[in-house]
Length: 178
Image (cartoon, rainbow, N blue to C red; front, side, top):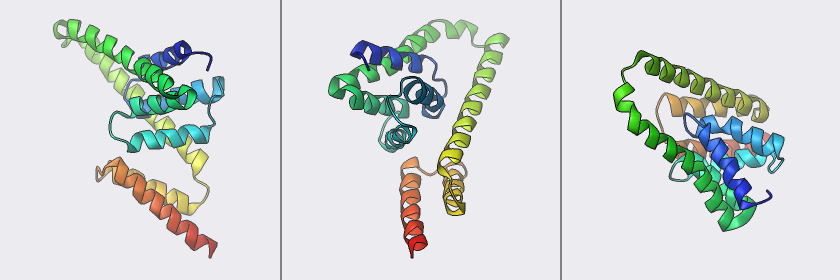
């Protein structure tokens, strides 16, 4: 990263186009940080993302803070966090100013429906990518499917699901080595 300004602008761009929260930002993070700028490996990005998901707060902000800290310590964490937050602050302020008068406009309703569909596609893309990169055998696939089921069907906290998946992987790893 060349400067704190570059870090801020990078996360401003990601924050500007991250509709749907933390899961939807993963493809953007991968494209910008892994593919284009080569600041992180894909495994490093997934590790920081997992930590960001397990810590309290908004996933997107947590991940931006961790990546910013990794790039330029405390100043980098502040720059990345502000870059991620600022677009949302601007957009929410603008929407709040005009939404009341256009909220029931059919074109606005259609636009929001389209955005929701796009977010679902982004999340599905992340799941497929995570599957391809991390599922190496039936045991991994079983842990993955169970984790998705616990999150989606039983609405368990992501923290508990990640802890359970880690313990399962440790147990499976010990069993496989014997």
